[in-house]
Structure formats: C-alpha cells, structure tokens
Image 1: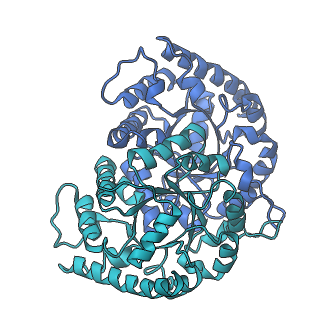
Image 2: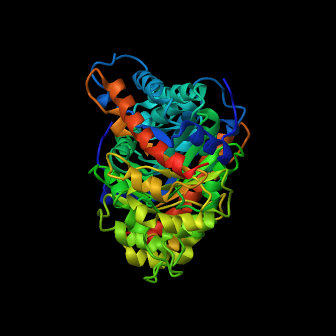
Image 3: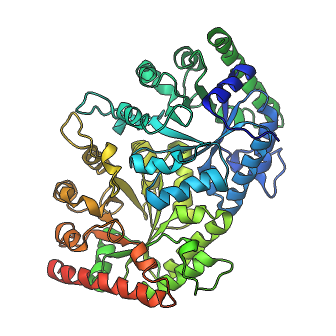
Length: 278
Length: 278
C-alpha cells in the first residue's frame, strides 16, 4: 500500500492521469441496498466495498456521509472505519462529510476523530463559528479542511446569500476570510452544483483552490456546465455524485449499473479535462 | 421512570421547583478523569454516572458533548448512549451537543440519530445551511432544536457579528428567520456567556424562547450578569458549565468538589430565580 500526502498538485495529477474528477458519495442507506445483496453483519461496509471495487478505476475520491453510519450506532461507526481503510488500500482520496465545527478542545476532538481515529484525508466543516472552530482541522498539515461556502440546497439562500454591509454575500466573506487561514494545499470549499451562477465570482476569489461540488444527479446540477465553469487548467474540482451511482439499479445488476453510470460521468469529465488540462 | 414531554412550561417548572437553571456539560475527557477513579471498560459512562449522581439534585439538564465520545470510536458511542439512558432515568433534560446540520435525507439521518437512536431531548444545530437543514430536527414534535446564534468563542465575531445590508447582524438574521420555523416549545438558541452585551437585543427578538448559555467558568462568562440580563420571569435559560464542575478537583475528592461547585452555582441561580420568578 502506497501512502502519500494528497497535496493540491498530487490530487490534480490524479485527475489528469485518470481523466476524472469524480467523487463517489457513499451515502449508504441499508434500506436502499438492493435485495439481491446478501444481508448480515457489516452490511454497509460490504456494500461500500463492492461499490468501490466497481468504480475505483474511474473515481479519484470517495465521500463518506457520516450521518448514514452514525444512525446505525457503534456498528455503523465500524462500517465507516472499515470503509475508509478499504478505500485507503485503493489509494483514493477520502472525504469525511461530517460538517463538524466547534471550538477549543471540542474542535480538537472532532478533528482527531476525522483525521486520526477514522483517518480520512479531508473533512467537511461548517464556518458559522469562525476561525477558531476551523483551526483544529487546519492544524493537520497533511489533511484537508473542506469548508462549506455555498451549498446546493434551497436553504442555502437563507443566510449564505445574504448581502453584508460590505456588499459581499456571506459566502464570499467566508471565502475571503478563510483563505487567509490556510493555503490551497489544505483548504477547499463546498460549492453546490445548483449554484453555478456564482462560480465566476468564486473563481475570482479562489482561482487555485479545490472546489468540492455536490448536487449533480438527484439534485439537478448540470455536469457539463460545472466542467465548463469550475474546472481550471490545473483541475481543482471534485464533483460528487451519490445516489445516481449507488442506487443506479435496484435489481441484481446494481453494480454493473453503478459502474456504467460512473463511466458515463467520467467520460463527460474526460472530454473537458483533455481540453482544459495539459 | 416517568416519561414526559419537555415543553417550555415543563422546563420552566423544573427550573422554578429546583431553583436552578444549571446544565452540566459532560465534556468527558478520559485523560482528565482523576487517577483515583477506577479505569477499565465504559470509563466515560461510569464517570458520567458518578457525576450525574453527584449533581442531579441541583442540575436540571445535562449536555453531552458528542466530540468527546466520537473520538473513542464505537466504545465512545456506547458510553454516550449509556449516559443518555442513565440521565433519562433521573428525569433530567438531555441536550446532545453535536452541532449537526445537513439537508434532505442526510439531515433526517442526523435527526434520527440524535432523537431516536440516542434518544436525546434536544440537539444543537448549525444554521449555516438554512431552513431545510434545520427542518429535519424540528420535525420531531416532542424534541428541541438548539440553534447556534451567537457563540462564546472569539471566532464568533468572524461571521455571526457581520452586519448585513439590512443593518442586522448575521446572528440576528438567524434568530429572526428561524423563529418563524418553530415555536418556543421546540426551538432554543445558543448564546455565549461572553456575549452578554447583545442580550437585550436578543431578548427583544425572542422574549419567550429558551437560551442555552455556555461559556461560564473556564471561558470567563459572568454568571450574575447572565442571570440579571437573560433570565426572564418565566425562566427560559439554561446555563451550561462543564470543566469547572467535571474537573473541580484532580484528587480523590473530585466528586465532592464537583458537587460543591454545582451547589455554589445553583445557590447563585436560586437567588435570582426567587427574585424574578413567581
């Protein structure tokens, strides 16, 4: 097993060599796992393993949605840890999507859980509590903090799209302030696929930062538009797709269907990557 | 065991009859548990149980800080569940301080984890993602959502104290908008003990909502000032104290010291409660 630090350059090399910026979101809901898949212990992990095996040649990253594992208590927690260890053995980038954030020693505990106990490469963090709630994550020199900026959901407009006295939207203030806290090898931003009308503004603020873009597929984000607008000459995006891959079929062919959907998305990505990246 | 819904009236009756608005924060760090306490399995839970036994006649609520349990993996998760069940047997109000928040089915999983799997009475939620990230918690008619408004940490000023075009601070906008989402029996707000200069403004916005006030003790908040300014004629506050109770002594007398500190705080509270509440 090769172990290396996923700095920006390395992540972009991975995108360029695989011609993919696909992040598969492991929002694994045991009740949605096709009935053909054998039930029993470690179900979430076994399903995830099959899904990783079916997609890891076309995906460069996996996003573990913590909520789906926590809801299963200690066993879910074990499935999450096993899944991360398995993805690690495949040398893929692992984002723990837990949207944590708290201060002082509490923040340190959350960061330790994400980066030491679970050993993810990146963790999503909410900015509401400010710098000292993000700092414990940024303190890990070989990991990434993925800060919520502009999310894909309708509620994203309640506060993120409020205009400040300065004339900036709140999400712009989040980006402007936080980009002073860490460099583009340690900090990336969540920008929803449904919010591409703001992408030029965002790219003018952070031309060289990675963006994690969820909301393609079930939420209606347009992949071609994202690749046109957000992909840079270096790469710098991860596009997360969850349900449309995981539950591509409810039949016995669900792994083939998942793989086919991942390949379809990857082929669209490859066209843009070849065109834009050198 | 008596089971009842903790609506606002019931919580306030509890405050009035115990003459206490003390919430003990179970930020249980196994490395800080006094050496005199026997080590072994379920350490966090056993320590919490002892702490609850030492304080439950003067505390009306307990706040479980999720980070401290998650960091211990599945066993920590079990300790959290055992602690909640034990507090429940004592008829005390239980806040799960997990600062969750996400959309759609993910949000539903987090709410289910807090309110069904772990069975807490209340859960802290971050407002950054807006209404549809809070709604899954508010959907539980017999539980509370505790929304971050103005937090006690220095970073609280990075975004929460940004002025919007409307002239309101962001935290005011969070309160103004969210109070339309649920009534004062289901929604309370986190307001840091170090931010009492804003309390009159907050009370003018939500005169009848509960405030959860952390930051007394280690973080320097002034209990007398809080009781003067935030306690209403009905009650409507929970004051959280963690470290100064939990780690009141590192000696063999740590339970007596914890109890003495809880009683000292409760006695201050009682004076104000008697004065203000009928």
